[in-house]
Image 1 (tube, one colour):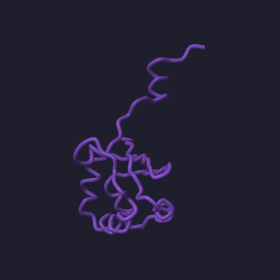
Image 2 (cartoon, helix red, strand yellow):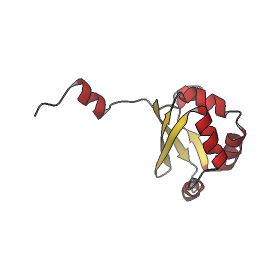
Image 3 (cartoon, one colour):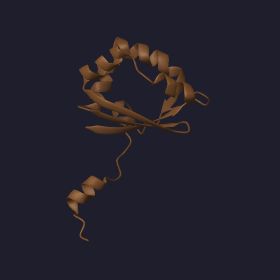
Image 4 (cartoon, one colour):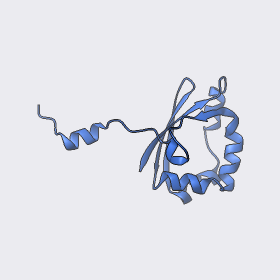
Length: 114
């Protein structure tokens, strides 16, 4: 599955957030592998961060990471940079940004006729 997330960097911490993500700890990468996170990409526009996560099951991965020591260390380190995640509900499912449209889906459902 692929999910999008939206978070906000604390004012004035934008450069530090990017520097902190130059390379994340290897033990966190190992944890991501273990919980089924295959890729995580982050874009920034001002203080807004947009995440694209490719994973087996986002909610299960987040639940498993809640008690993961590598993730706990990372959250303690990165927490001062992140103001909050924009959510629409409780739990990991509430973190997921709703999908509106996909060109690929449109092309497969309605082939373009020149």
